[in-house]
Image (tube, rainbow, N blue to C red; front, side, top):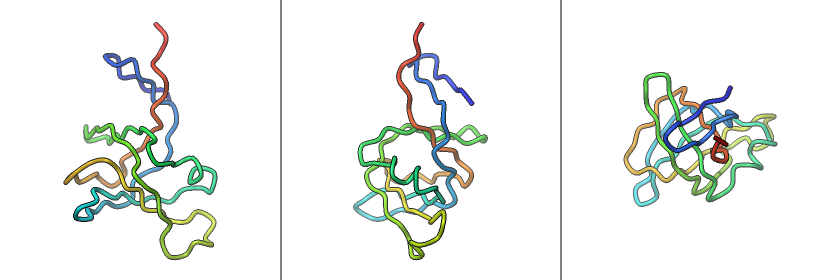
Length: 106
């Protein structure tokens, strides 16, 4: 899937994860939860720019501030908590997270 933000020339070309839940940690920010493969988990690094998009029209661009595994760290695709740079925002379940690509040529 290739999605473009025409005004910014940003290309969204890969879904990193799908949000399963969302909650806030006072003084820290918004945490979204998702099940990810080990390969994707290694790619989710602090400072990484992502775009969150939901079919309802919800859209936000933010940065990852941290990633933490939940309880069963030996599961094949463990649930992780991803702290994002959004304050007091409820991210809908089913929201897709995309790695922000380089600006599109032309």
